[in-house]
Length: 92
Image (cartoon, rainbow, N blue to C red; front, side, top):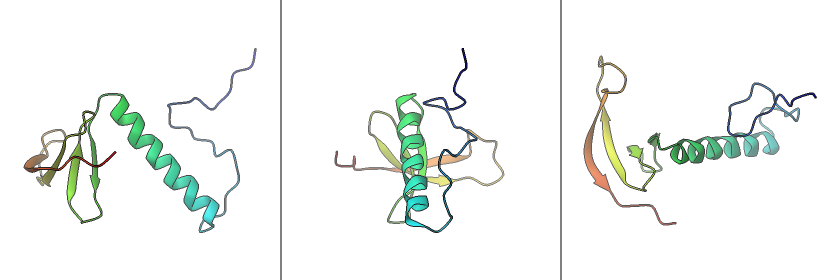
């Protein structure tokens, strides 16, 4: 039995539809894949780090808690940030 090269919940090296960079369909596919990766990471119990609309560096936990963080240069990954303050939980 043949198996599919595309595995749900995994990052795949194949693009199923030939997109043209800059087209609306490409932009939407990139946005959708980013959102899926964000949600899958939280579902896996891992925090997600991102720059929010206000320009804050944010660390979000699966339970919805969000913190503004500051990146620490020249520090080993995993310990390379510190919490500045807790942020309000995003509206569902």
